[in-house]
Image 1 (cartoon, helix red, strand yellow):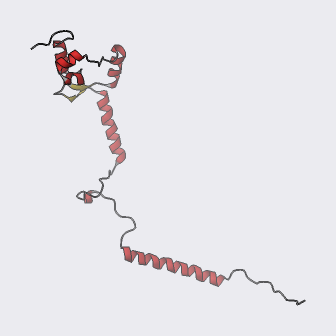
Image 2 (cartoon, helix red, strand yellow; image 1 turned 45 degrees about the horizontal axis):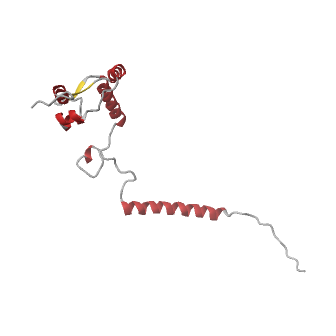
Image 3 (cartoon, one colour; image 1 turned 60 degrees about the vertical axis):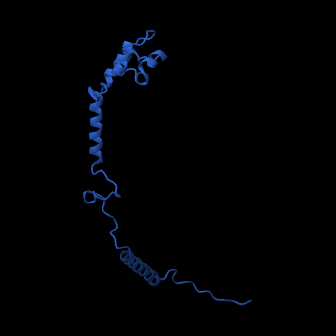
Amino acid sequence: MVETTRTPETRDVWPRALLLFAGGLLVFIGLALVVLKLIFGSAPYPELPGAADTGNAASPALQRFPEADLAAFRKKETSELATLGWVDRSRGIARIPIEDAMRMIAEHGLPNWAVTAQQASDCGPAAQASPRAPQSQKCLSANPPGKEPRP
């Protein structure tokens, strides 16, 4: 049998090789950043579209203060829901506060939306589509069910 002598290792890691590798890696990353900057030539974060870009139809119109815009929108909605006002004055459509509407429905119930065929034929499709409109009320009061229509 042949006998071999074994010597223990003195070091597991060569510090010089490790430092050379780390330095080479840093130089490579630095050169890669310079090359990418030369190729693409842009800032890392482009500017957000704003007042300068208002003429560009391709860019979105972003809100500068979305919290303030939302607060103003909700304030306007709340004031519309709590006040009387006209929706369309020429057609006689108005809005009432929610509390009043709920109280009226609780007291009187929902209106009867069913229109008989006689009333619909006398007053036309407008009365059938919107029986609570002022024009429909006039027609329905002038032509009650079971009565001959006026010429």
